[in-house]
Image 1: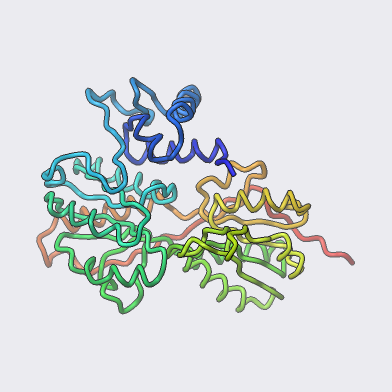
Image 2: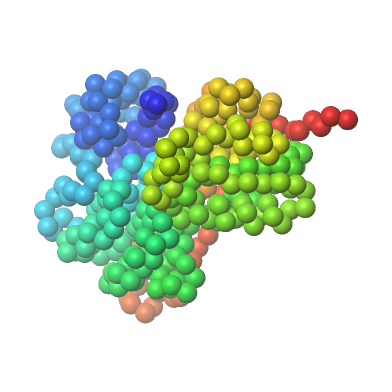
Length: 377
């Protein structure tokens, strides 16, 4: 199924806001679209005043015209020579991850305001791809590290604990919370309180009278695993919830990229009918929009037949039915992580205070995809 235009343009804006000026050709390659399509999107976004375009370059509104275009780095590649990171803060994030690009934008803003040079490293989706990027950054002389590992599975996460704990420069994890007692427990981190975000979603549906609720969620990131665990705990503990279930939100939503042996999309409509469910929490946004479309094709109307709360709020508002969504404070996460790293860099070793594990609370953006359940008398 083709990517919706609104979603693609949201991804374009997220990348440009995170990095500044980006060449159109490099951006097209990274987003896996044709240069012609990308150029058309950039022209439309420019007409809407959402970005500025120049000679083969797109940049955020308000950016000064640079003398040399700044290309978007490709995954696994470096734009500059071996000393490019000298004295800079290295930002290490996964490719094609619009959620974390918003986090990256918050970090970039704080670092630039502090006059700190930034070296961006983007790693591909293969397991273990974070480590080579970090090693390159350190070899290049990076003085600090902000990192958001992908960690598609718990095993992949555990495999990174040892080497990441041994990084010799100040390091802050963004939107990641390592396992308690692990080698990274005592590493600075800033993330969203996803238990609270899940609570907001369930509380909203329960307050509207829904007693049978389904979670359709991913299972390929620490955020996804936190949401699934929180939902099971919260739903089981709420006396109002009569029945609940969890299903993967898309065929490639698991850590091995195969939710179903035949690769078929989950039949959420059938599950809702089987369980008598009238409410659903859908993670993440792109999957949520696709699931709502498939519900409509199956005769299930949102919100008339099923009330929906999405989780992530990256593109939830762009659907034909704008989705009520839990909105983690993505940009604030990046900003807080950068400020914590700046604090570490500004003080001598041993004089920066205790390790900090900061959690910021998500909010609920109500848009009307959930409505009060009217029970038959």
